Image (cartoon, rainbow, N blue to C red):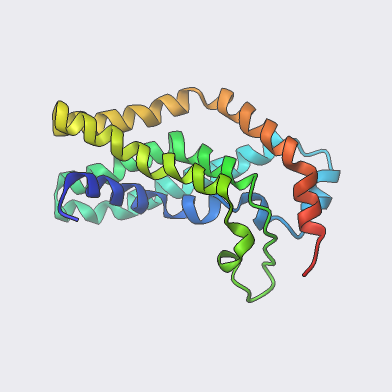
Length: 193
């Protein structure tokens, strides 16, 4: 954990804990009333946007609360801030996209653990995990070692900013996937074990 790349890895996780634990199960958290919600006049864009804003808000709060990492040096906190920018601009979309393929109903009134269900894991969500974790590390390492440490942080931050700039186009793609998976998701949430 001494290397700078591991510092960036930690920064992604410190700022994105809520994003990873909540975001990939976005429709599943609403599984108990998802059929009712789909019968109402709720647009997928509104639904996805509301979840995205919740993820962004939690990422910002987590980043601010982790300011005590300044005690370990500016690079430790810089990794968290840059990780937060990347999480908002890239990973927030990827977890929402991956959530469309996880069709594990979560009963919020039960003591069962949602994360232990074998249906929550599938190949599509595993493939979507690669860019969430590996891509920012590759971008950081390339710029860090080829140019300078500051360039590594800037490269990851710029990736996140570019993701935010293309938010509307990305939301259109995510919305299309949710619409395509709608009936499979409804069927999965209606089934009881």
